[in-house]
Image (cartoon, rainbow, N blue to C red):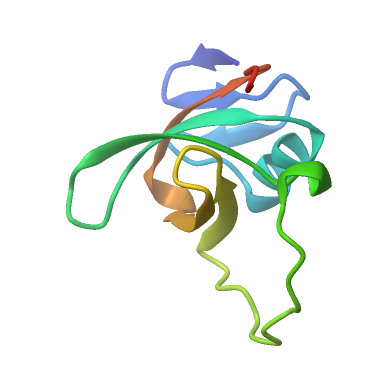
Length: 101
């Protein structure tokens, strides 16, 4: 990702405002591999999470039928071995190409 002033540009050339990645962009990256996401939790604590949406890591579960909130994204946390979510506007940085045992 490159930066210009207060704007960030994704590797796909998608422009996003400072500290904001689109849900579609993040979902694509998470479905393609393992991503380390740095974000601020609602309580203000900074968290680094290694997560994915790759099928081979996800448990077999039935859909809850509930729509996903527009301002957050649910992911599989590989270290916690469970579903976690984060607010899109709280993402600080993403790191792609992470290897996981």
